[in-house]
Length: 96
Image 1 (cartoon, rainbow, N blue to C red):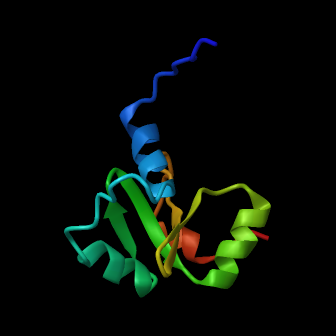
Image 2: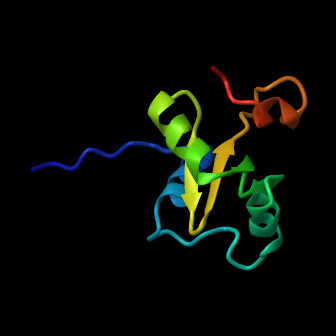
């Protein structure tokens, strides 16, 4: 059986690390990003700009499947894509 190797760029590796509890978390040494997310603010976590959301919105966004969402311990967040033109506050309002 041959193993198939795939290349993962740094952004994908960061996203994978954020999704995997086995990987070291890049924010483990700095509690500021987690404090910002816990209060519904944006924060840079690794190379991702995340916005803190509540558990209910996390579930809804997870069902929609349009945005990348994360559960970071007791904190929930969604990714603000780097391609987004405009303020981060656009993501405070949920899409219908």
